[in-house]
Length: 242
Image 1: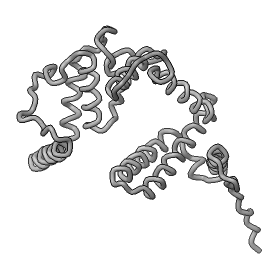
Image 2: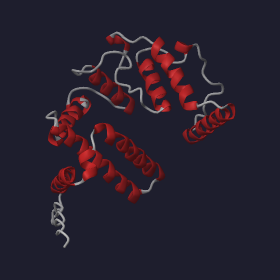
Image 3: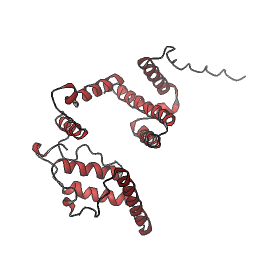
Image 4: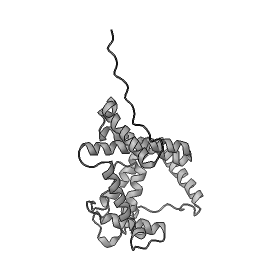
């Protein structure tokens, strides 16, 4: 005679009347339940879950770029689960919690928008970015070196772009630092044409690398590493935001 199998668990119900807070609370309860009852969830930590987080972030980007709204909504849900799970891991270690992360984000957004919630003036998107970076650099716990919070594990193109921006914002020239010259001719003035031309140029470079048996990702990463090694790593405060 077979032993009777344990009854299936009941998932935390969604609120019948809806509501953002109530729905998020139900999702939080569901993630907590799976953390206890699902063998896969039990086995995870931040090192095993983060690759899935990155996958979900790229899937969100794909759906957004494709203009697929229903797909985007679905992928955002998958990414939201990653957020809930990672904050639960912090809570288990007594470091923070979902509430703590959300409260910290609330305070950060208010602090970094002094042109909205304070006396600062910003009339363009560029002004906002400059103000954001200036506030960010003054926050406690930030690493002060030029590339302090640019993760080296970023994809090579994003790593190069962020590193170049840090050098440029600090008053340097990211090309001159490596003895390089700007491309001639420059990209077209029209944004649509420039976007197309940039993609085509990058595509041709990737093809050249393939034919030569070189890895363009590693090649660009190596050049960016040279920039990070040669650029000033401790800019003075008056050089601008990093």
